Image (tube, rainbow, N blue to C red; front, side):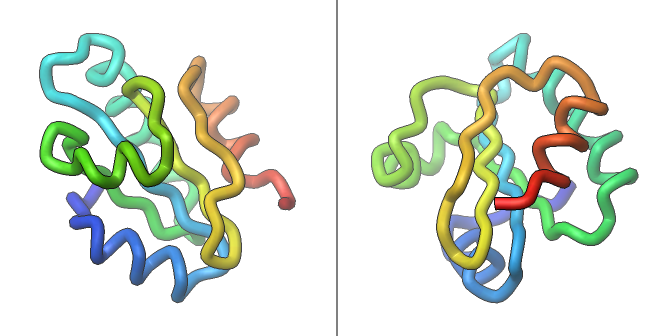
Length: 102
């Protein structure tokens, strides 16, 4: 999964119908598991642009989107964040979240 800057996220979010932005921190054990789940999900869901970012370097983004913890998956639809996922659970769960109509 490609690393995105805040600017890249904003561009993707406004240019595409649905977009996913995965936020993590490198020392978070749960994030390491979630990263593997996201890598598999990205291989299955090829029609939605997905990026990731180390939240340690995006403090303003965390404040702006009221990110409560990591891992966090921001799902946007038509330029607006429609869901924040904190419990990744499984690839089928992520697939379902990303396939959901908003």
